Image (cartoon, rainbow over all chains, first blue to last red; front, side, top):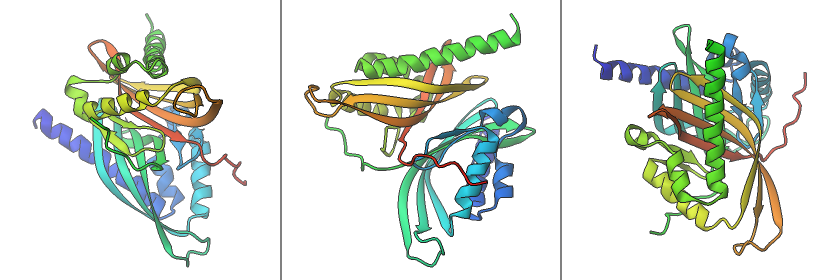
Length: 149
Length: 149
C-alpha cells in the first residue's frame, strides 16, 4: 500500500470517528458519546467547548456536561460541511462547518430552528482507534465580509 | 535527557510559539503574524476562526483576514489563563482562556472594554519550529452553570 493510500485510509477513519461523535449527540446516547472520547492517559487532557460555553476540562467533567445537554435536547440534527482533516502521527485535527437543526421548546413539539457554527475537533490514536481529545464549537455571529483588496 | 525533560521542553516551545502569536496580534505586526503561521506543505491546511466568525481556510485568506483585523484594532491586549498543551509527535494542541482588553472606538481613545473567550490553537512542527496550523477562538456567551447531580 502506498503512503498516499495509507493517508487516505487514516483520513477516512478520522472522519468516521467524527461522524460517530455527531451521531451519538443526535441520538442523545451518553454511552456512545462516552466511547467517542479519549480516556486513560488522555483523560485529564480532554477538553470541550460547547457552543458559547466556557472551556471544560477533564473526561469526567466533559461527560457530565454531555449528560446535562442531552437531558435538555429533545431534537438535534447536524449537517456537516467543508470537512478537512490534517493528521500528524497519532494526532489529527478536523475542522468543519456545523449546520444545526433543533427544536426550541423543551417538549420537542415546537418549530424547528437552524443555526450555523464551526467546529475544531482534535483526535488522538489510542488502542487502534481515533478518540476525541478536544471539541470546540462556536457560533457564527458575524457573516463574513469579503476583505477589501 | 529523560523523556519527561524532553516533553517539558517541547511544551515550553509550544507555549512560546503561542505567546508569540498573541504578541504579534497585540503589536498589530503582520510580518510577525505571518511568521507565526505554518506555510509550504501546510499552507492549504491553515484554518482560522476569529471570534464569532466563520471558518477561514488557507494561509493567504487567513493572513488577509489578519491584515483587515489589525487595520481595525487600535488596541488589544490578551491575558491568557489555564493554558494546557498536548503534544503528539509533530502536532500539538493548546487550549486556553483569552481575557481580552480592547478599546471600542476606531481612533483608540475610547474607554477600555473587556471580554472572555476560549481558544484552541493547533501547532505543527516544521523546519525545527512550532508553527500555527489552526486558531479557533470563540466568545463565552453563557456563564456555565454547575450541572445538577
